[in-house]
Image 1 (cartoon, rainbow, N blue to C red):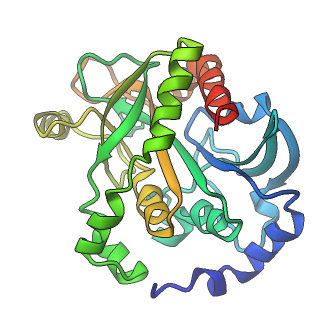
Image 2 (image 1 turned 30 degrees about the vertical axis):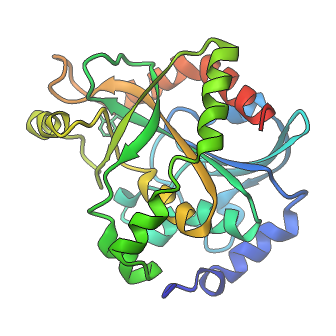
Length: 274
Ligand code: HPA
């Protein structure tokens, strides 16, 4: 790896390690509008990311920056509330802090969540979609430079996604809690603007089901680090041109609120069953 994250983020990592109450079983990254999940777990240590030396400040509404060590039953959790996005003008490594931190704390499992636009016409706002596959071609240049992986290496690493065991646990949790899940492919864009109808038509023709601006770099690096990963999109709106409505960030946040109960039920069961 060309980018020595443990050297670069030394103060940041030490600050977190000094406050770490336990070794987490799983890390969960909460997407836009899903941050309230943090209110439904037993928090043991909460750190405002603005207290952490070198941690970038989030700039997006709906993304309070917190890192929580929390418990669900006997399971130990590391929760990231408030993501740093590529489109906030940060470099790729600052969007990957949750993964660097998880690696340092030896967290074996990762659940990534995000808000996404629905491309598949069978989807509706409020649906939850397991991300089975995704595009990553626009990210590979940065990745091969900084993290020293070739395209071939990346392909090998990505064979590990989605992690089989976590995938089955998520399906089991979905049946146990009667929270119906969709499945599909996620199209990553760098943002920050939403797509044009023509872009969405292209993604649809290429077989993509949802679109968003996060998660894929987290999946790639977690795969390199050997962290087992599964990711879920919350469909907060139908993507541009799929229906005759205007997109806005408020709708994304409002739909997040609508799904918070079923999302919390599903994720808690998933974590409990790990
Ligand atoms: N496009 C991209 N990202 C998104 C969307 C969208 O429609 N909705 C939520 N995140």
